[in-house]
Length: 79
Image (cartoon, rainbow, N blue to C red):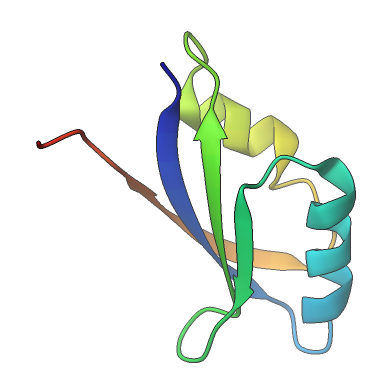
């Protein structure tokens, strides 16, 4: 079973489209949206079973040039 997480991404000014393109090329996301507010992008992704969430995001996402900050929200099956 994969773990569903949401990652909000703040980009350096003027880099949002470049960051979104880089994410799309890596094909790690399920959904990717441009958002208003404190963060520029919202990404939904599934972490493979057995993977450490923090390490996976660090190694597969946060090395993209232009990402200034991220906020990861873990989900839990409640029903």
